Length: 52
Image (cartoon, rainbow, N blue to C red; front, side):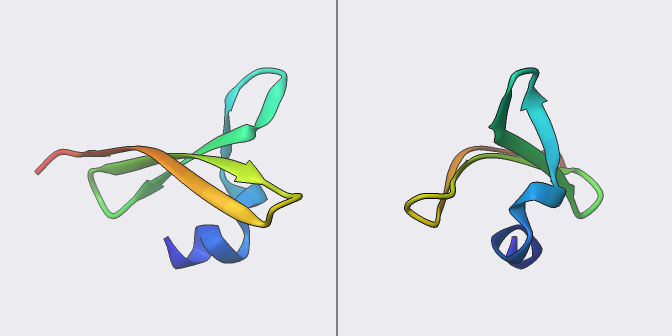
């Protein structure tokens, strides 16, 4: 998650036409979905999926 905080735009866009909604794979079995708010400089995590 530290990489996402530093470079959120390097993550995959989750929806076409809404680039502020992003997702990234972490570890071997994790996926985190988040919203990038450039104005407020906040990342809002709204979904974490982990299979183990």
